[in-house]
Image (cartoon, rainbow, N blue to C red; front, side, top):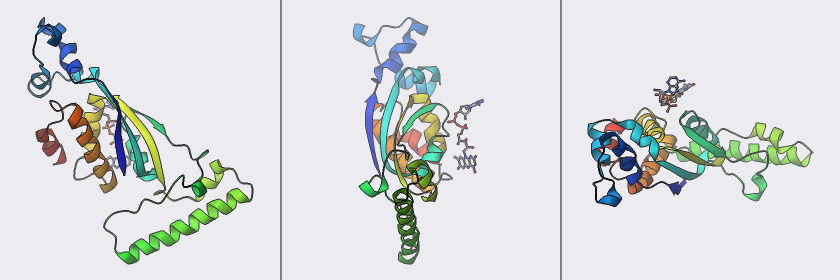
Length: 197
Ligand SMILES: Cc1cc2nc3c(=O)[nH]c(=O)nc-3n(C[C@H](O)[C@H](O)[C@H](O)COP(=O)(O)OP(=O)(O)OC[C@H]3O[C@@H](n4cnc5c(N)ncnc54)[C@H](O)[C@@H]3O)c2cc1C
């Protein structure tokens, strides 16, 4: 699993967008950053919609992707299995964590069989967009996800939680790490702990 930050608007945009409400001085004019008070005390959450972050995700399963794209306030660009080819290393199998050696072997047997059927179908003239029907839910994929910070907050609320499925939970932790570096006043450790429980 690999997650990278592609783009992010500066944290101070959150604070600056809300100062029109109070007539307070902007940071560039010597004012303070009021992000923390806005978000954590006043719950002035519209301010979170003035900053956007985009992440690139690689090495998640299609099953995980199906959960990610249910987030209504995020947007997505996902790898197309109509164009990418498994035989050129385009995708792999994402092994669920915590399986015994024997269970992993069972999964690998099914994966090797499906992949070879997929390749044979293509070889026999079936289009990739149809041959992909035999690939399992844990075939790997890549996607870019973008959204404003309130959209990301909703994602963390659902997916850092202990009820979320393990693959998406691990992904949510990694994205939280990245966004915490960019927005330390928003995505604090306190928030993470609260959302996990
Ligand atoms: C543990 C877990 C198990 C799940 N299992 C299943 C399952 O078995 N089957 C299944 O189909 N889905 C399942 N889901 C997906 C779930 O039903 C939601 O679709 C998904 O989590 C997005 O939730 P959301 O719409 O609340 O949040 P988001 O899409 O992140 O939206 C954020 C918030 O915006 C508001 N909002 C969004 N859309 C609307 C709207 N149309 N009208 C009014 N307010 C809106 C709501 O306040 C919402 O909480 C599961 C999710 C989780 C976390």
